[in-house]
Image 1 (cartoon, rainbow, N blue to C red):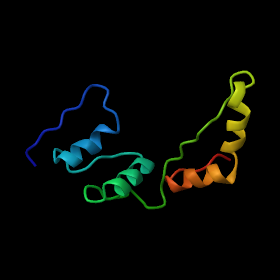
Image 2 (image 1 turned 90 degrees about the vertical axis):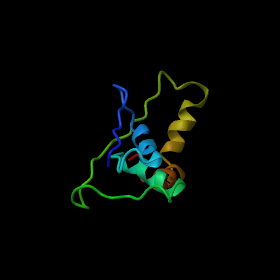
Image 3 (image 1 turned 180 degrees about the vertical axis):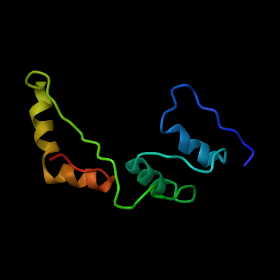
Image 4 (image 1 turned 45 degrees about the vertical axis):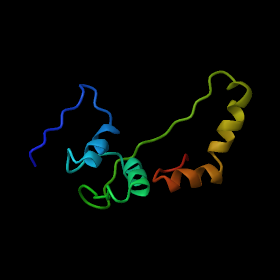
Length: 99
């Protein structure tokens, strides 16, 4: 491949797949949940290729915190995020739900 891809000093993960779609790069390393989204939206441009052993993955924990009492919607948001409906949304997008 003769093309050279140059990124800004602060390259964001969303820029690398754009280079693949343009044909300026052959691959892009992204978080699994982003790769899942790209393959769903643009299946003609992307495929998932796991790196390393298929059982290996990096865990990224998601935290929720309320400032003070959370305002008018804070408690309801916190409650929703711990329900099965929110867990289902997370799983659909390749993420682990809150525990």
